[in-house]
Length: 209
Image (cartoon, rainbow, N blue to C red; front, side, top):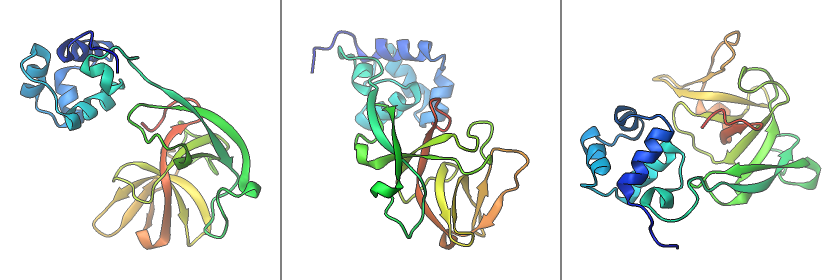
């Protein structure tokens, strides 16, 4: 790696000003105390790896850049991923028959770098309007667990179809929420669905990150 050209406190200050993020907001989004953030900015403390990663994610910068190294501020890598026709437990997702085309998008520094863990698929409905309309491409990171409140591509067993919804855990089960105000939430359980992955982008614009 190239030599360090600025210190961590200088880079943190630059990134916060560029993103228009104050200490209180950085605290709220990372869980790092405001007093510790103040020490970072004054040069009286250095962030450990986990906290550096958290701040890099919120500030949307390369962690190595934030440390002060002579690297690009945002290190986006363009990757080519398949566009799938359908989602179903009965088919091989990445078979030639199920790959409609390919598209390219850029992954961020802190995202999974394994290209095989991403694919795109058209939204089957307008439930996530205005961010994702019917036919718009959703970029999906394959994972079978989703944090509460995140948006996921899921397969519903009772209706035998895939959909995109925000997953909200409740005391009695889970609710599937749409962004479209005309759509009501769906009450269901984890036994009724298969989580395919997290939706991280919609078409070209980032909608869920």
